[in-house]
Image 1 (cartoon, rainbow, N blue to C red):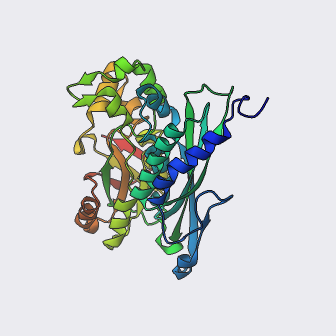
Image 2 (image 1 turned 45 degrees about the horizontal axis):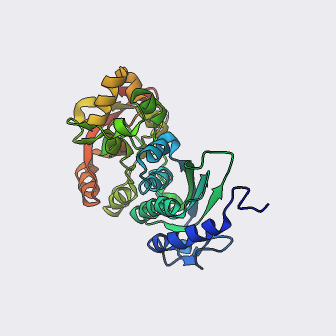
Image 3 (image 1 turned 60 degrees about the vertical axis):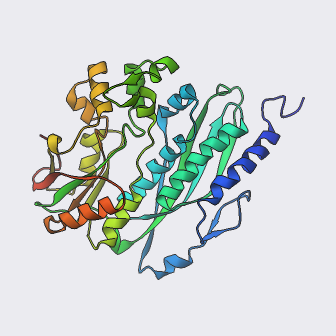
Length: 341
């Protein structure tokens, strides 16, 4: 008896590392010290000394049950973008710059090419957010999970000068809410998605005219990363008063998180286009509108609050970063919460 016969293939692990190296190289920043394969990832903090009062920010998350789609579609090269996005978007939401990322893949069996494909997506997410992929772990769990399945999670660290943090304390009545378009369902609410649609290859390969693509391609579209858009806003000299990443819990949970006491957000539902995938999901699942807005991003992945005088400048900065902005509402005085009208 040996480790391989017990279900853990060390040689496959070595091959996975070799295959992923080319993807990891794409994410390197000058602060990264050493290469892939050490016991820890090293990142120089020399540049942080230039800040008056540097604050480290962190985020950890996974892709939830969205990985089930990757299994059925046998498509593994974008799910890593989701893992990165869920972490770095939270960091950017606080005004921070993501510095580095680490991934964790638990699998029933290590198939090196599949693992490398997953990591290629992680690397792409890191490139989109200018974060370095400085380490990770691939753990084979024979007997704990099926051989052809895996789970993916990640952890990111970022930094912001304390004076530049987005805390919501500067929020005031009259501020304008600007939303940034999402790419689809992102990485939340898939347990409900899987109840509405049959999770088979035939179902996911079905083409829908209103989607302009197959159901599977619409659902697996990777989470949009908004790091560069928020950096562009900051570079334009705009002070963001508050920011919300629209993830699990949709509008009703996430928008109030950006508010301070005495402020109330009003969002106009017809101020931007709701993506077709959400209309199809609501129709096929007979899901009431409030539940949709309480579960999904409904076409907006990030919302910022800015002074009315900064609206045009903010819109231009978001467009310059390749994102699509919409004026979607306003801040009023009142009880902390959100009204969708």
